[in-house]
Picture: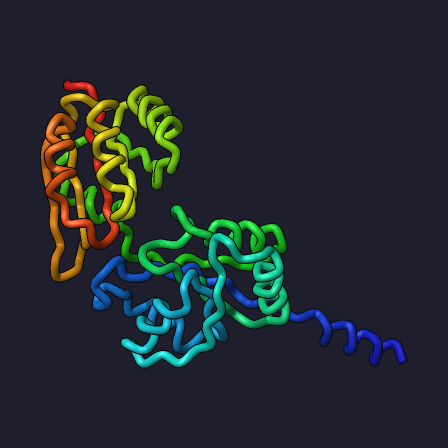
Amino acid sequence: MYLQIGIEAHHERMEPGTLYIVATPIGNLEDFTYRAAATLREKVDCVYCEDTRQSKKLLAHYGISLETRSLHAHSPRRKVEEALRMLREGKSIAYLTDSGTPGISDPGAALVAAARGAGIPVSPLPGPSALTAIASVSGFRGRRIIFSGFTSRKEGKRDRELLALRDIEGIIVLYESPHRIEKLLIAISRAFPGAPVLIGREMTKFHEEFIQCTADDLPGVAGKLIRKGEFTILISNDAPD
């Protein structure tokens, strides 16, 4: 009787699955890593993603057939609990955002925090990132990179955020959407007069574009921009040597 109880108790202690945080292409689908594709094929039972439509395109491109479930910034808490339940049951899942490395300006951080709190293994599959991609082609030699992501939608708060960043020496990285880019660039021109700036649009895609200028030039640049695709902006805010 004692042995039977012990066997049953041992059987019930199931090892949890692994949460894989998978970096996805920021534009060009060929930038997906071999390791990421192999992990999805061989080790993952389900994919949670920011937008199932976008993730399905990527999976189809690599011939990967997996169930996809939505988990975005406005998803209820029960969606995270649903993912944790699967992981506790021994199933491994992957989290994919629309583009780039999860956990940076997207809902991935909430899922990772919940998994870590539950003692579930979390494994990164590194790869594309708009932040590192534009920094690599900027030529800016700052001693530090300050990632600020998306600024506030409210003009006054956005201006205060930029002024606070002005007090930090380094390369400042911002993200922006097409319909708000003009207002952001004009605000940068006020907050960082004379600072070198690099704007990246549609990086890794066919219409990839980089615009290098100073903050003083930004009002003129803003009026001529093609407002398509996501924008990444670098501001060199280092004091001269």
